[in-house]
Length: 270
Image (cartoon, rainbow, N blue to C red; front, side, top):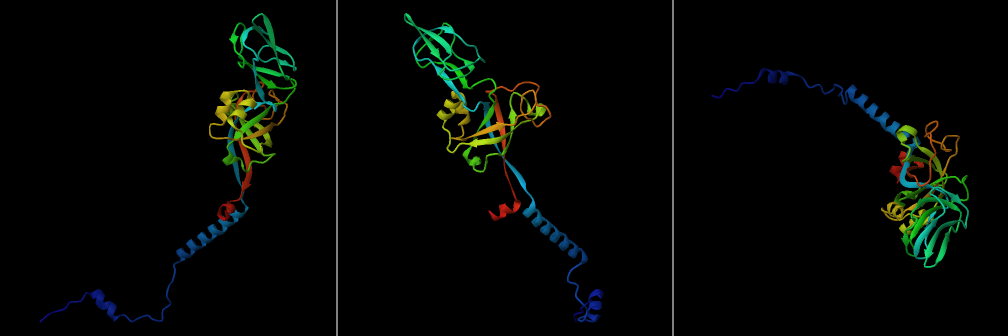
């Protein structure tokens, strides 16, 4: 004879009546709270995505110079330099004698074809040169009151949304931004076509700069007008006074060009 033993809990459960008419509890209160929190977050996120504006900017390197750029003064003849009539930093009008070169028994005078300022003296007294040798780098300026501009070379992949009048911040390498802040400016013009290495070299009068600014491909040239202000440098800075010294041309800068802000919802739409 087989004896079957039941656990007391199982027997009690068999004796209980079925509560078929009792209301079923679908969710607990804490679940409702969680759903409400999620709904608030979704609605709040949607409102933020449609109304918030996120700032954007493009980074580019460049140089402080004058709007007409620079050129390399070359010797038209071969011979020996026997006269140097200007010093580095001198400003002069067009037609000023810069060098004289002894060619056999005659002397050839090398004159400036335009007014400017010597930023680099390459030829030296007594130096033997050949035709085409670079004697000096000359900035094209009309006078000492000409205003500097910043020329930035922006990669084409980033330049599409840069606009005339956009704000620009310039970190000047000769004036640490941690101490003096950044130089303020606005976009004055944007080149319609990309610039080759040779075009950059011709504008700046420096082959090394041409190579540096075109190392990642042919960029677009963006000219930035510096905002004037009564400071030691003559321009506006993010700090109250900026550096206590003059900022000269041929100084390298790192620029941040601010683009029109974008709404987060545009990312979803795009």
